[in-house]
Image (cartoon, rainbow, N blue to C red; front, side):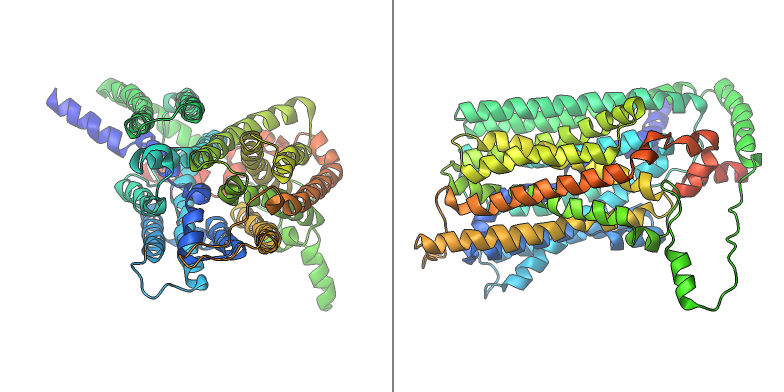
Length: 587
């Protein structure tokens, strides 16, 4: 019995399901960039920044969180644990230096560019966590990559609300105290979680039995139910914390319940591994040894279509060669990086992301100052951050499932759904612009949901229009659109107009280190009217993309995957054959 128990424990710790569970926990701690609004007020007050300077810090936070091409290059040549270790070191180092700077433990006070560097390094750890955990999960579950991506991105969306509950429990009743220790928590907790699973997150090349593959979907449904329950609890907790004044002990109970719910998915891991362990008898193993080689052999002997040689007429004209290189293939085929970057479709999608998603990022980053200018208490500002986090999660899940259903049943172009999502942010921006009493709660819900919903729609559109061969590079290129939009709308528009209104009111930086403070509806009215206008324009640009691609989406965009074998998909992603090859070597 003891031998069986130890064998089962070893199987659990080395299995794919525990690896997936570790990835879920890493992702649930990897969204610290979403709670910038909670502690940004103390950065501004302690360092004496203007709103434009604070928004510059927020812009570099967005740059760090969204630029991850270098993380992908590191992952190409190193195992996942190296990627996670680098991310953990960057997270701890960046946020620790930011914490020391804000608490006055670094003398003299660092200049603005150095503070921007600190937060960019800390936020960039999110890209390494995504690459180390998320990409590894896709490789280990190639046949369920869509479901896996949705779950992992969903846990990232919940991470802001999880951190908020921990903040409320650790730093006093009402969350109205000093938020600077929260920066220290953001520094060490995600790093500790990543380090704890360094040996767990790895590519598992062992072939799976057909029975294990059939059980995958049911296991993912179990993980989804747990995440939905966690989101529902967080929503109820936020509502109760808004209506009643909680004590520190009551906040502690809520935080403990959240942490306990994060342990529930481990029961799914045990269930799945127990089912596999029961099949690991001599008789079942003999049957599996008989069946698996047959499956691998069929996959190995299946003819792999060779890529058609590119034929071109010999020419000496450099211009003709360049035009041939830039001539795009049909939509849905594999574009080269250059062909995709110069295509009209990419230009439209990138522009829509800059001004559509950039507006929501501006609202999220400024939510603390927006609430302060409109007279909301600090406890309500923490509530706004939690609402954005939860509805961000629900937006990602809803957009993934709904867009797939609309595409399959009605051939509705995914860019058209993205245009509708971008338009849905307009009421939220207008509520902020006109400062309707109590409306910031509704605005937080609308902006959080639309920000989350836009992410899977953009990522899916890139993969469908430009193919999967260079998807990682093109995906990261689109990721740079968010910080570009944040810089234009957040730093150059919202931050500058805020400071102008504060100067008009006669507000000046206090000698005690307080930054420029603006009070009233006018602080953000003009800037969010501008954001509303460019958001409508972004929706129109996305609608134009939907019109251009209507014929493509009217057909079966997955036809080549249905007609071909898994080899074609594997060639596009570069991963499916990784799991089959070791099986052939074992034969």
